[in-house]
Structure formats: C-alpha cells, structure tokens
Amino acid sequence: MGDLFEPERFKKFRDGMEYLERLIEKLESGGLDLDEAISTFEEACKVAKWCYKKLDEAEKKIKLLIKDENGILTLKETETKEN
Amino acid sequence: MEQPLTVSELAELIKFNIEGLFPTGLWVTGEIREWKPHSSGHIYFTLIDRKSQIACIIWRSTAATLDLSEIEEGMQVELFARLTTYQRQSQYQLIVSRLLPKGVGERAILFKRLKEKLEKEGLFNPEFKKPIPTFPEVIGVITSPTGAAIRDIINVATRRAPHITIILRPTIVQGKEAARDIAEGIKEMDEHGGIDLLIVGRGGGSEEDLWCFNEEIVARAIFSCRTPVISAVGHETDFSISDFVADVRAPTPSAAAEIAVPDVPELMKKQTQRLNSVGTSLLAEVSANREKLQAAISSYGFRSVKDRVMIEYQTLDNLMETATREINNTIKSRSSALKNLESKLSSLSPINIMKRGYSVVYKQKKVISDSLLLTKGDTISIRFYRGKAEGEIKEVE
Image (tube, rainbow over all chains, first blue to last red; front, side, top):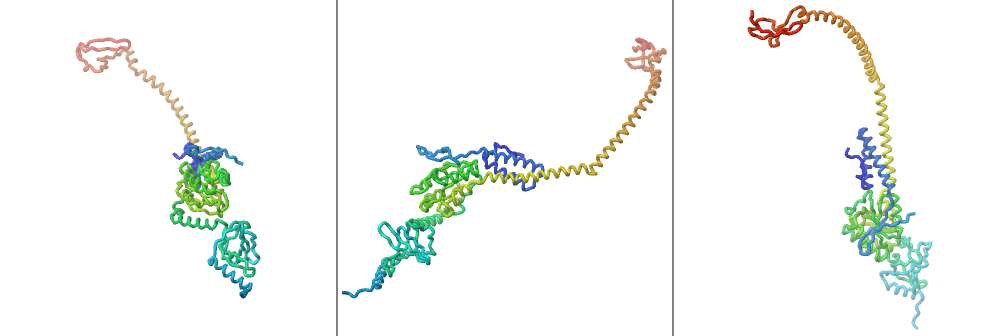
C-alpha cells in the first residue's frame, strides 16, 4: 500500500482533512475485505489523531497588511486582545 | 369701492393661483416635525428648515403605498408633493405623494443606474463566481481595524477553525475616501498572494455609511480580484452592489466568517463518530469471524479428523511395537546362525588350507591356476602359509 500515512506529506491541515474524508468514505462504502478494512481503519485513526493534534497546536494568528514608509506592502504580526 | 370678494371667493382664488405655481408637483427638502399619524389613517406633519415651515399631509391611500417605517421626528427628508391650500383656513400645504430620508432618493437612482450598468456588462454573471475553498488556511479581511466587523470575523473564524491565519488590510469604511481605499485594499491583498479568500465589508450603519460598497470602483476591484471574495456589508436587509459582484454574499460579517471556514471541531466530532461506527461494525465482523472459527473447530467434521488422527497414532504405535519385537527376534536368531556360518567360513578360508601345506602361485600379481598360462622363463611368486618365494619356470607340461 503506497497510500500509507506519512505526516510529512501533509503540510496543510486541509490535506489531512481531505484524506480522512476519503478514508472514511472508503470504509463506509463497504466493498473492502476485512484485512483492508482494518488497515484502512487504523490509517484513518492515525490521520484523525494528526488533525486533532494540528488543531491543539494551533494558535491565533492575526496579521496586518500595511504599507511601510517606502510604500512597500508588509505583513505585521499583531497582538490581539481576545476576551 | 370695488365689489368686495367673499372670503370663500378669495380662498378659492388663492388656491387656484397657488396650485398653478407647480402644476406637476415639486420636490421639497426639510426636517420633519409634529409627525402625527391620525386615527383616520391620514398623516399630518410639518416640514421645517431654519427659517420657515409648511404643513404637510399624506393621505391614507398614499400612506399605504409608502415605506414610512424609517421616518421619524426630526429626520431630514426629501418629499415630492403637490402644493395647495386648505380653503377653510387659507393655509397652504403640501399633499405628499413620495417621502424619502434625505439622500435616499439620489442614492436610489445612482444605485439603480450602476446596478443596471454592471449587470449589462455581465459583472454579476454566475459563470464568474469562483468557488469558496473548503478548508482555507489564510483569510484576508478588508475592513476597519476598529469596527465590529473585524472583531466578529476573528471571533467566529478562530472558534470554527483554530488553525487559520487572518490577515487584515485596514481600511476606512465610510466617507468619501472609503471606496478608493477599499478598492486598493482588495487589489493589494490579491497581489500579495497566499490568501485563500477575502472578506470585504463592515458592520451595520445608515445607508449613507454603507454607501462606499455601492461605488463602481469597489465593484470593479471585486470583479477583477482572482482570490474568491465574500461580501459582508451591514445587516441582513442591506443589499449593496458589492454583494452582487462578490462570489458570495454574506448577510453579516459574522455570517461571512461562517461561510468562509467550516466548523472544524464540529466536523472532527462528526468524522470521529463516523469512524467509531465503522470501527464498531469492524469489531462485530472480527468477533463474528472468531465465532465462526470457534464453531468450525468444535464441529463434528473437525473433531472426526482429529479423532482419526488419534486412531492412526494408536495403530502406528501398535505397529511400531510389533515391528520392534519382530526385529529383535530376528536379530537374535540371525546372530546364532551367523556364528555357525562363521565357523563354516573359517574352515573354507585359504589360510586354513595353506596351513595344510598348499601354496599359491602368482605371475605378475595374478593367481595362476592353469599351467598353460605359464611359459618357460616366466618369473613367478609363490605364497606359502608362512612366507614368500620367487622362482623361474624351467618347463611347462
């Protein structure tokens, strides 16, 4: 199975979410024999765990797009006061 | 002295002349005072400015056709009316047929004109609507840094998708400079790149406050933006030109954030539930298989095979026992026979014969048992019971 989960492959959260959706759809569609179903299931659990981890690690990132004194657009980190 | 006019005749004359001043009606602007909807359904009020005032009436039948929900005491309005007099008091008054908050009339016309123009050009066509990405990572927001809109968007978006980044391009969102600033902001965000979608908008306000989102420069900036745009201007009831051009219209900034990002924790919960139910059915399948296996093991077929194997074992054991016994017996009887044979063999051995005085003649290591194999002069070896000798043939008979 060249399809095995490698976290490095997922740079973005959405990749994980989309892969998870595909795996669950595969499982729900039936069609798999028991061995395949179990390995797909294990795979899906790993991806779900990765997604949860990503969410837990996430911190609020709010930036400002402003022009500096030379008129060049720059991104500035902000500290947002959240209640 | 001229024949005097009766008061009624005068009042009639005044009325005739006054009405003749603006035969098709006129627009008047001023402030509303003494707004009095009467139980009869007619509405009486006074329109004033700093110096003067004039009585106004909206007849019940007209009032029913006008949207007067926003009209209130002290409001600056523009109205279209017919000028006449109330003969009984010879008081002039306006019979109102249209009444709009100030600026509304002009803006309504501008709005309609621009909407028709852009629609004709195809800026609202569905084929130009870009899809909103399902899981955006970076969201650009073009609004006031101090308004309610950015606060609502940050709250909603980061609650629904804690992993996202929000980039704000601060803009003015009301007044003369707003439209240009917003249009520039859209362009800058689009050119900056790496932004999955844009939210352009502001929180609620008067129609005048929201007006910048009805300007052509903003509409064109949204249309040429390659990044998908969600417009979020004011409240649910506010529609702007931006809404028509944008890829998606959100009724409010909070709603825009909801459209922009899926509720990821909720979605993960749902995915986990789906996984759980798949897992449960897999477990059931595994345990069903285990039961099947158990049943197969304890089935008669499987047992009978096992029993047969055990019987075979027993037979084999018996056989082995018999065989061992037989072999032992055979060995015993054979060994006594072997002793007899040995003594017989030893009596046949040439050594024993040679003991009795016989010798063996070799020629070139071959035993010679026939004198014809020898010729005169051959060298021969003779082997005795004890010792050897060499000799030469003198004669063959």
